[in-house]
Length: 127
Image 1: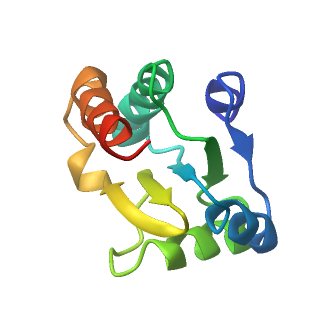
Image 2: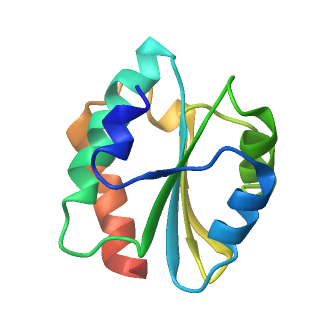
């Protein structure tokens, strides 16, 4: 499940400091809160892989894994406030500011292409 993202260019962040450094960097950063949840993550990861192939995409793509590296996940979620914790979740930041988020309830029951189209729209707008 980790490799589904790292092999398409995502950097795995395993501690809070790495999350801070990534999100607060200049430019656009896409954060995927990965999850083992079969019902939502099963479409989330393919959607992210599809969107990553778009001509316009974030400067950085990073991932944290819910239920694994708690400090990194909690730090990423703190940047996503006021949205409640969600896994999976996808967030786009521009110059350290949250500009787009997709929560679990927007992922569940939706085909991967629909989720990818949502992400691609955000990439086109902000990247």
